[in-house]
Length: 209
Image (cartoon, rainbow, N blue to C red; front, side, top):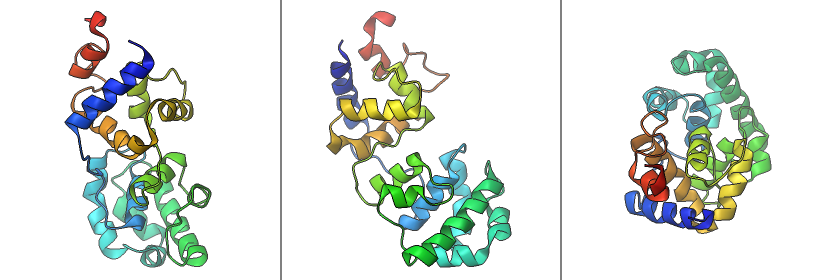
């Protein structure tokens, strides 16, 4: 099966499995989505969703997050990995949003990626899910599945993102990155599937069985 054929099959099957995939991080608006995505680095979405209600209750806006301050932010997010770095980033980006962007989350990649703690993947999620801009956020899980499914041989997430953007129509990007995440968690896990066990892997590579 050619790579383009594998991509078409992946898209077809994932649309069948997850026609309208939800955003797995609980949030209220663009700012709380930005915060939740930043907090999800090296941490499960489930754990982030356990922590953010208390955080958003007292600091659900850039102004209130800035006023809360780094030490208090740290106390609220301490159960998460890299909590010290994340608390510093949240305090810093909130101040920038207040002082430079009138407390509004910017809608461009350069402005988002200029915020403390916001890399390309985080910016891509916000651009895609908050503003509807075509983007294809690639984390280590999507990178792993793209390799397993023969969609990319990229050695890093940057190359994998470029490969996936070339393979899939732009109109599918915003939902597809969520679909891949859900499928990977539920069916094609790192330990539970070795490329021969889940239904999609068996369909993509019938000779591996």
